[in-house]
Amino acid sequence: MSRSTGLQRGLDHYVGNFIALVLGARRPVAARVESASRIGLIQPTAIGDLIIASGLIAHVRARFPGAEVYLLHGPSNGAALDLLEPGIIGHTIDFTKPVAALKHIRSLGLDILVDLVPWSMATALICRFSGAPLTLGFSAPGKFRHFLFAQVAEHSCHVHQSQNFEALASCFGRVDHYAYRLRKSFPTPDIWLPYDRLVVCHIRPGGSQARAKAWPMDHWVDLASRLCEAGYAIAFSGSASDQPEVESVIAQVESPGRQCFSLAGRVSLPEFCFVLQHALLAISVDTSPLHLASALGLPVVGIHGPTLSHRWGAISPNSRSIDASHPAAGYIQFGFESHPQAEEIMQSISVDEVYGTASMLLGSEKSSTRAFV
Image (spheres, rainbow, N blue to C red):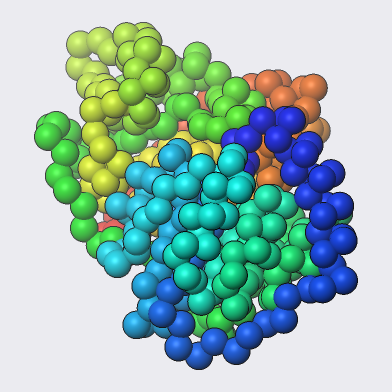
C-alpha cells in the first residue's frame, strides 16, 4: 500500500481509523492454533520490504513445517517470490480494491493471516474480516489498527525494520537470531562480466519517493570514473525503464581502458542475485538492491538521505552506510512522507565520502574470503 495515491492514503487513514475504532468494541480473540494447514502473509508492495521480512517468513515455516504458506502480494513485488526459499505459494492480489482482495483471501480458508504492512488500515481491515481464526499485525502510533488483530506487535520508528519484523515473528515463538533468508543459488545470466573486479552500482530508487532518494547523476558519473581509474569494472543495474539514465551515465564514464556494463532490463531478478553473489561490492541508494546485497553477503555501501540507515540500511557485517548531514535527512519512516527540501538532501552527500567508503571495503575484500548465505 506504500505505492498508493495520496487520496487512497487519506481515505485509508481517516475512514479506516474510524471503522477500526468502532470495531474496537469487539476485538478479535486470539485462537490457539497448534497445527495450521494454511497461512497467509500480506505484503502488497515493495521488494525491499519483502526481503527484510524473509526472516519472518522462514520463522513461520519452521514453526509450522506442514502448512501451506501463501504470499499475498501485489503486481509490483511478485518477482521477489522467486528469490525466497522454495515452497512459498504466491497469490497476486490488487489491494487497491479491498473488497475483491478480501473475497480472494477469504476463499483461501486460512488458519492464520499475518499483515506485514506497518501502517495500512485497509490491510488490517482485510485481516479483521478474513475469517482466519488467528490474525496478527503491527500496532502503529496514531492509528487504531491494533483493534483489528487478535495479536499485535508494536512497530517502532526508532529501530531497524528487521527488528520490527523480528518482533512480529516472535509472536510465533522465540527468534534466536533474525536473518534474511533467500534461496542459496540463482541462475547464471547470459552476459559476460569480469566478476574478479566488478562493482555493481544501482542508481535509480523505486517507489513514490524515487526522486527524493536519488543521488545526483553527475555524482554517479564522478564515482564510476574514479572506480574505473582504480581498475574496477562497473555494472549498472536497473529495470528496463532505467535504461536511458544508465546508458547516459555509461556514455559519460566509458573511455579506452574503462569497462562499464548495463544490466538494466537485461537480467531477471534471480539472475541479478547471481551477479551480486559474485561481484566484489555493491553501491546503492535505499531501494531493493541494497537489501538484496545485504541478504547475499556482498559488501555494500548504502547511500541514505530521506531515510536513515539505522532504520533502512544494510545489516550485513561487511556493509557500510552513509547518511546525509542535511537537517531534513530521515524524514521518511513509512515510505510516503514528503518534505519541501527533499531533493536537496541527497545532494549533500559527497562523491569523496562514497568513494572513500567503497575503497575501504574493496581493500578489505581483497584480503578476505566472503561466505555466501
